[in-house]
Length: 412
Image (tube, rainbow, N blue to C red):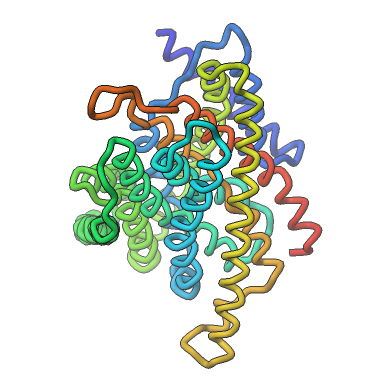
């Protein structure tokens, strides 16, 4: 009964804080994070530990599905060159950059452990991108690039993470095997998403006038898709994103108006609750992680986290501005680059600054194995988790709170 009471209290707090954020003009995710951290330090507050498997299954599929469903497919296709560059190349570049900094900066950090940390923090977060940029008046192109990148970059990060953890256990890294697994995980995710979309489209065409049945199926299928993909050890993230993109196109062309309206209202409430809960839970998790690390190390590791955030921003900035230059050069050279895919320096800075870490990084970090295959404790596990959550918080609060001000100053 106590657990249910805690859940109800957290839900009530989340709804109240979300309403307050609208009144005082602070982005909802940021206020929820701050409130979660503050509430977590209250002595009477029970410890709320996040189960990474529940987070990945309960929160990720519907949030990814909704973001993919609402993204403009035409804009996604137009900007796929930029989205692919950031979602694949930048993820591996960021992994390597963080690993180098961690290896030379943090005592006891081996190369395999440094790459584990790098892979955890390499991908930007779809939930953060949608939650923080919502209502800021950014162009459709900018929002599509940010959402598109963060929707598909998790697959790259998770593959890098698997190999890094295997390396900690003593398994040697083989480049061609890593590349093959990456394409199998990615391609398998697309295949699972496509098959389930086709089956769902056939089923919905039979029930399409029954709004309750259609919306119930649509609610269920992101979870089913994610579980099936993960069962076959391919990307559940990619499968759900493909399903969302397909259903977006199908709904516009085939759904009756009353089904679309009911579906939209239903999903608005679901996403509001899930988005709010996830940011509040991240805040609540911080005091728990803080207690698992030596107090003498807290400020030192907080300093490491600041350095890592700055390094990720610099790497991201360099890659985004290089992409801007490459697109303009290709367009002037009359290659197959649409003018709509080009963007200016102001947009490059916003794309850089909006690349925040979030719930996926946190869930991956908390999912680190406690023991290695030989029964030995996973080295520096608490320190890596603390660094991960510190980077997530600094990234979300530092970039999230300043983003509206930056957009206003740049007159976007």
